Structures are given as C-alpha cells and as structure tokens.
Image (cartoon, rainbow, N blue to C red; front, side):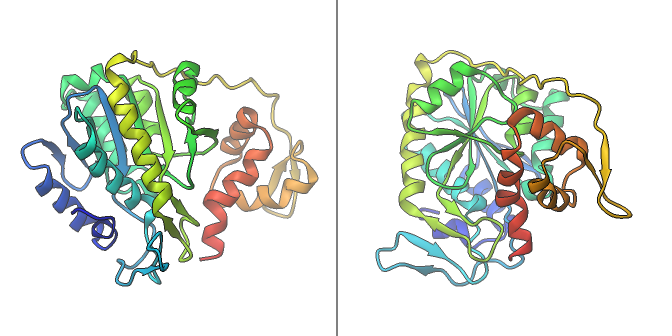
Length: 301
C-alpha cells in the first residue's frame, strides 16, 4: 500500500484487513469499528475507512499530468485521501504519531462512538490521556481547518499559522473523540471535492500539501503544549416560535424569508433544535454551508 490508488479500490472491510496487516504488532483492534495504531509522539491522527458510494472503485480516470482523479463509481476521496495521508505521514514523521482509523463515519460515526465507549471503559492505552491534540484529515479542498465545538483559541492560532483557514462544519469523528479525550482537535483539508456525489474528484497536489504540513506539525509536537478541549458556549436564545409552511411543516418565525426553502430541505436531515443551535453559533450563513457541503449532494448524485 504505497500509492493513493491502493487506498481507493478496496471495500471498507478489505482496507480494514490490509491496515491491520500493515501495522501488525502495533495495533489495538476493535473489529468492524476501529484500528488504533500505537505511536510515540503524543498526537493522534484520524481518518475514516468508509465512503458513501454504493460500488467499490473499479475504474480510475486521471488528467494527463495525473493530478486529478475521478471514477464512474465515485472516487471515494472522502475519506480514502485521509487514510492514505495517515499512512504516508506515519512513514515520513521523525517520531511516529498515534493513528486512529474508524469505520462507518458516514452513517453516524459508528467507529468513533465505539472508540469513545472503549475509552470510557478503560479499555484503551493510558498514553492516550497524555495526547496533546488530535488532527483529522477528512475535509474537502486545500486549506480548510474545522474545529467544530472546540474553542481553544491558542490551538486555532497554531493551526492557522500553518497556512490553514478556519472553516465551519457540522460533524466528523473528532466531534465525538475530542471531547471524550479532553483535548483540542481539528479537521484539515485532504484534496477531495464534490463529496458524496459521482462527480467527486481528488487533487493530488492539495492532498500532498496537507500531508507536508501535518508532518511539520508532528515534528513540532515535542515543543508544543497540551491543548485542552474547550467547549464553545452557545448563546442562550429566546424560545422558538413557529410559523406554518403547510399542513405538516413549521419553521421558526425568525428564519429570514429568503432562507426558508433551504431550511425546509435541511429538516429532512436535522431537527429544528439542531439547526437553531448551528444558527446561534455561526449565524444564518451556516445554513447555506451545511446545504452545499452535506445535503445538496444527496439531491444531485
């Protein structure tokens, strides 16, 4: 497993087995849920093994220079790019980080939830409680850094100092793992675009750019402090009054008129309380971002 294509073709089960074999003797395995690879440096990298696509990748199409990859079956860069990145970073880093490969992130973070439960039950190595921070590689584009509900400004300043820009997102595995371990975490871009659609593509140069930056972060770790997880405190909002859209749909009355159609579509995926929580934290613009990133692809597959 030396090149990106080696990570794109296997099914989740096949990739799980190959990673177990590759890191044999260094792993703690929860079959069907996660693989934890032991490290030395107190930093953990995270990626998930599943994709949303129904078929495994059979054909890979490339541009003449080999930089852009697509597949008629859906290339699965979300998050096979992250899996490839973790393996390459582990090989390149002067001192090895911890790695966490999870299963079934796309259907609710099943593997991450199993990891958190194992931690609660004291089934994981004690060294995890000494980690300084977590880096997930499971974000679209070239230089996004998503911190979710973690509000450690010192950690954010360190990460953005590595040429990443703070962006917004609604969920990934670190949304569960970071608060469980009590340390700050970030989700970084991994070069895929148009996730959750058959038009998804991978930009190798963008992926390689993140890999290089994360290797630098790992090599910095010895001189960095432990960045604690600080929960973002959402402002207290007024009681939510509803207005009627039709016989079965009610929207909060304070949703701007030009956002009500989008809000109604989002209700197929989120509750009113969840959407109001996002709006209270990030403002109305988050509705468009959630729609474009996570909902629209399901309508245009």
